[in-house]
Image (cartoon, rainbow, N blue to C red; front, side):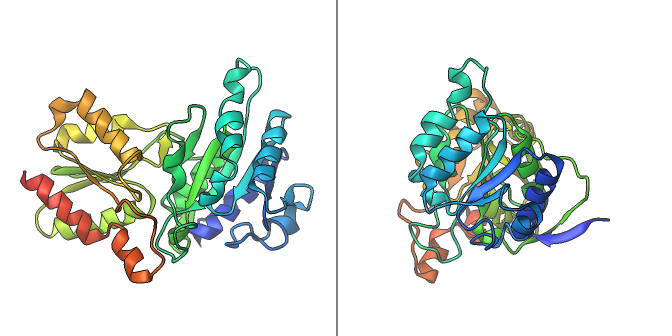
Length: 326
């Protein structure tokens, strides 16, 4: 029987199922134990698996990632929680220079089956230092896989895949999606890393969006359907590896591309995707690709400013109209 739950609960379910299936899986982080996590996303795990496998740490992201890295190379399959993705800057050296490179530098003799979970994203009023979409920071670091689940089903499935992978995987959990509902089927297979989801088919334009922007993209597509514009929407689900083939297949039918990312334009996955498409598949395009992004500023704290900073459904729809009319 399928279980209905919200995005936050799906995190706990995925971790519990992974820990039950493999006693090498451990969880470490700030307040992940008796407190059940800062966002209550690890509730119940401490009582079920005990202090040996669910370990609270000091307030030190360097200690969390360093400990998890050591545990991974010694044969465990640790899951490390960085409370806010913004705090990854504190332990960036461990992730970029140790975790990401160790398997390569040992010639594949040592694997690093480490999952690092981080809460990311704007829209919840956490202000400039606690609201960034930090996944873009890691795009230029070979050796890391990056998952950005937008739904309950994908969050559960991608987390299970991340924990089972022999390479380090960063899983970004969007704070503004914690309350969305979905279904987790007992025994459901993991969602493969590197496999995009075709959220809706369409003939007029291909829209590619992740996490919160996927949901706003759906809203935009529904508005445009009433105007006779048929939108195809693709959620990559993972940024590394990226499923370019699904995007290209859609472009063969639509010939138009709009990418929506929750971050400033420069250095983001959206700009990288558009660059690749224009360099390698220019012949598929009947209009210049469009990147819908945030302003090049920190995330505002004030509610009205934060709402204006984030691309909304109408703003996305307006850009899609321009591309279709080109």
